[in-house]
Image (cartoon, rainbow, N blue to C red; front, side, top):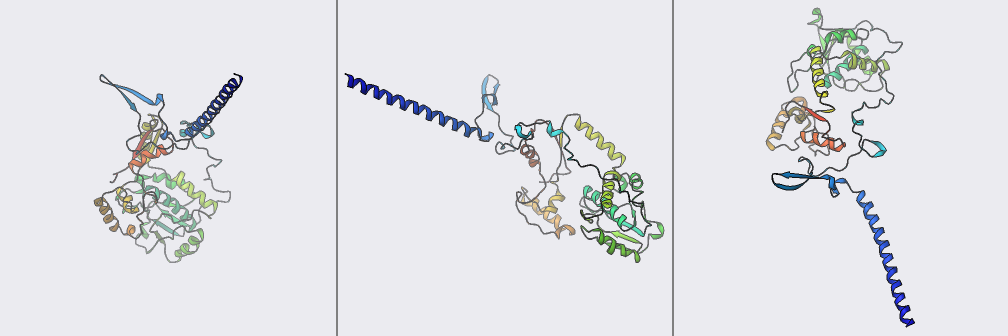
Length: 368
């Protein structure tokens, strides 16, 4: 009897040991599974109860799971949070002014800066490109006029571009303000004097990204033979670096103080901005998925063969576009204009809740 009792107790002890070991293994496995699931992207997790919307249609009851917007093939992966180490999306931080990082406006001239020297001649400027390109080019030409001691004639805006805009300088910018604000830097006049209307002039394509030595030595030497120099292009004609501080400051004064939009454009812009702000925070996107930009860049992504052929004809008929070599790579390999679909995907990539702000998109004629 005693031997049987000991055998029974031994068997129970083994069973109890196995049970305790099994429970320990299950607990360890459960902990690892929870840790693994917590690291999965949200798009792979099962929906929680509060994420499932209950909808009643007519007399029927149906369950509806919120799905990704139709333009996305699947729910986007989690984007980088803007809330710092807390990992919580701070939507209000998105609309605050960015930190200045101790940078301050740098437009005031130095203590040794003086009024312009006696003019050696007149500088005519043909601004080329779009509005932003022309604006930057005009600022460069103000600096160039200072470097070569030239009187600057109000620049001519591009009328030969794809859109054939007929606007003159005073239609877009405040001409009087431009002249008066640069009085201590460069002499600016509206038109070439009548006595020089038929004078011999030299037309120069200033070398791109040129430094001050190029203008002081090569361009300024032209005054010995000519009274009028015409700059055939204004874009990217002056280097960004290694220029005297006062020349850099002059470019900034021209850009941020002298070049002011005309009163009618200022009034229209204020009206539009006030209307957009009245609805709360907003994102403004200027799409360039337009015929001229696509023809220039050689982008035919998502276009039909007929549309691609039309863009090719436009490019071949524009002499200063067709000289540029184009490698028709994929959109992921090249910097191409943003299309409408992309304008909706980008807020998701940055973690911006699309339902929160209004998105205003500006374009002329979206192509494709």
